[in-house]
Length: 578
Ligand code: ADP
View 1 (spheres, protein in one colour):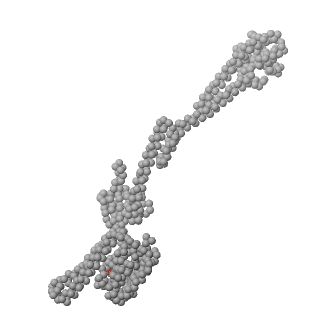
View 2 (view 1 turned 90 degrees about the vertical axis):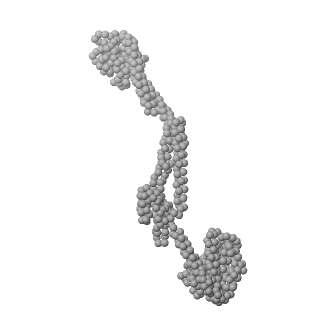
């Protein structure tokens, strides 16, 4: 646009000057030839020195030609002899006008100026007429207003053309810019956006030619980037999900022991503060053993595993190992700390040890007795019929005890190994209670107990294993018989208390001390070990009951008072509640 504007101004300026010159030259030539003709026309009057006739002719000629004609006298003042547009009497002498001075020496002279007489710009031409000391000067002047008016319109045309050219240039520039520059601007904006991480942006208008190829390349580059990024994000999300679902606490650090990531379990187990990433291990992990081990592993590059107790009755296992992060090209070393809560596992281990010790102990006692009596019999007692019968009875009692123990152990291990309840059917609790009562009737009768059955006429069904439930109820009633002195009262009741079916076994027996109640369902736990053994008990009965109730999704409650009696309540969910 500026170029077009400059060209228009230069061409316009030069044109205007040239036109002005040409116009002036043409006007001057015309003035001269007119002056020559006029001088000849005025010659007779000048010779006669007839001022009046001269004035009139000058006026007439001036009017016809459109020039101002002035005749200047030969005196030193240059008195005006005639003038076509003014009264010579009121005009001052013109001898010293520039064109007249030049005409005096050169024969003719030119000048352009604003006339004192008519106050408009004029082109003057003066011509000396006649030779000798007293020449007369004929001066012709043309008004330049017309010339200036023509030039002004020319200037206006040039300015209008320049403005049109500029507007045209502006429109053309705009469209050219749109076609050429906008795609580049768009590509630049796209590159900026991608640099700021907006990988979803794409170049829509891509221009033509090489620019289009560039735009396509950039778009596919952005596609690959976002694909890579989403793969990386997916990988990260997967890793986070895996870490979050782990029960082990995981802390990953770089080689300088700065934390890179931790999972929820680590935050919980190591009691890490919020946002531990970026901090040093020693800043956030308060356990000295771990910090020391981390330093050792970092120095030696050897994995370390150890156990520690962060609190009483809490056991953790920590594994610290060196790792190498990243792909083959960008490998960086670091450390992984894995913390595992092994409290439960340790407890199970203790329980197992305790269980094995209990079992051995329980087995050893009857076996020792049996072995002792057999030896006594062999040493001669067998020949004494009274002693022999008594010893054999004792051996039989302890053999029964062993049988009970083994069958209880088998029962327990069977219950332990089954995660789901086998043979689930609709179970009739009333029938089960009746069968249990019948089974134990001889023992009840032998001890003179009174058995009461409180069984409803109809019951809502429950789903379970009838054999297991019968075993549980038999165990409870058997205990009631065993731990109730002769002539006591035993009651078996079934009640519907939605959402549960309740089986209640109560007795008026010796009861259980308050402090023993929480442990009564533990394996081999007995309030009075020797009394239990005397009764043929194994200490496993209530464990089996509790197990059975649990696999049925129920619960067991106990209320007992020493020397007043005990009441066991089994609550089983009704079938429609399952
Ligand atoms: P046991 O084979 O010794 O009876 P259990 O597991 O059945 O083993 O019972 C554990 C202990 O709970 C018994 O040794 C006894 O001390 C106590 N106990 C169980 N039932 C009763 C009850 N009805 N009355 C009093 N004490 C009971």
